[in-house]
Image (cartoon, rainbow, N blue to C red; front, side, top):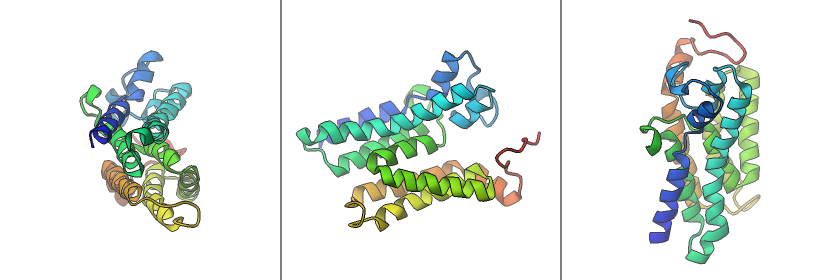
Amino acid sequence: MLHTALAALAAYLIGSLSFAVIVSRAFGLSDPRTYGSGNPGATNVLRSGSKPAAIVTLLLDAFKGWLPVMLVKWFGPAYGLGEGAQALAGLAAFLGHLYPVFFGFKGGKGVATAVGVLLAFEPLLALATLLTFVIIVVFFRYVSLASMVAALFAPAYYLLGHEVVWQASGAKALAMMAMAALLIWRHRENIQRLMAGTESKLGSKKKP
């Protein structure tokens, strides 16, 4: 129990590293919380005009979701940590991104970090979820919509793949459902804009 709690705490602290802010500072850019959507994520960093900074942010945000789960996979069995601890570590890292203790609990929406967690859970699951994201973006051109649809499909894919592609873990399924619910909650303003028809489409200029 103690080892599980320590793993979750370490995962949360890793997730709390707001790379949008850290990378922006390293690149000499403005704090992403002070412009655009105010969301400390790769998409808002892209609004600074620096594609390299946005790409680095995206990769590091995904990495911090992947790493804690993999550390539990690699080293956890020696301390009695199994699937449940992996699931908790992934969820804790995701929560760290949403509510980072080092950055006033003002975090991003968690899309890249969630992908990193899925990649650590099951690489094929992450691939299927990313393909779903791409399909929605191609047809509808709404990144926010694609993110939410992909988040909803991820646990469904995981459960559908049980005993066919992988042995599904109930703890991981619950963690994915929780992440999907939180991700959609963080997109509530996007949902309002989608319903009002004012959400920006990919490739279109944002209206003032």
